[in-house]
Image 1 (cartoon, rainbow, N blue to C red):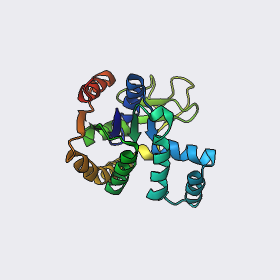
Image 2: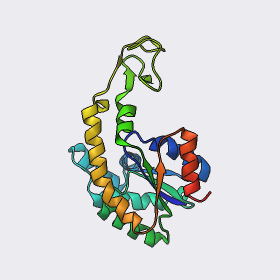
Image 3: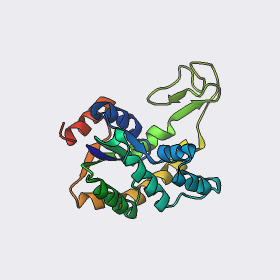
Image 4: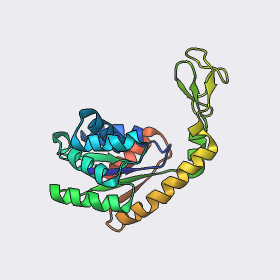
Amino acid sequence: MDFILLGPPGAGKGTQAKLMIDKWQIPQVSTGDILRAAVREGTPLGVEAKGFMDRGELVPDRVVIGIIAERLKEDDAAEGFILDGFPRTIPQAEALQGILQDLGRNIDHVISIDVDDEELVTRLTGRRMCKGCGESFHVVFNPSAKEGVCDRCKGELYQRDDDKEETIRQRLRVYGEQTRPLIAYYEKQGKVRRINGTGSIEEIFSRIADAAGN
C-alpha cells in the first residue's frame, strides 16, 4: 500500500502516520528525515544536499527527488510507504510518478486530512511550552493546573513564536497555495481520500482505514 499523506499544520498528520505505520507495517518517508539521514551517511546526494543546507539555501528538487528515489528502493519500503512532505508541487509529483514507474509501482491513496482553518488556529495558538523542562500544554485541551506554570517542574510556560496567530495563518496560507494544485492533480487520477480531521485520534484513524479499504 503506497500512500501520500497531506494535511495542514496542526491537522495531526504525525499522530496518524504512527498509527498507519503500525497497521500496515510500512515506513513513513519524511523528506526532512531522509535528507538528514543522507547527509549523516555521506551519500553522494547527501554531500550535495549538505552544501545547499550549509549555505542556508533550499535543496533543489533534483537532489531531493534523487534521495527519495534511493529511499523507496530500500527493503523496508518493498511492501509500501507513507510519503510525508513530498511531493509539495506538481513538478515533484510528476517526478515521483517517474520514480514509481521505474519501480513498477503506483500511489494507491492520497490521504488528505482536512480541518477548518479556525480550528487549526485554536489548536496551534493554544500551545504553551515550559521554559524549564520542555513539557507541552494547551490552554483549551490540556491546561496546566495553574495558569502559566508547568505541572512537572513549576517552570514558566510560554508561547513559541511559530505558534502565534499571525505566523499560523501565514503557514496555513502557504500550505493552501502549495497543496491545492497538488490535490487537484491527484483528484484527476481518482486517488484523493478526504478525511475529516476533527474528532478523537481513533475516530480519525478509523476514517483513514475505511478510505484505504481495510
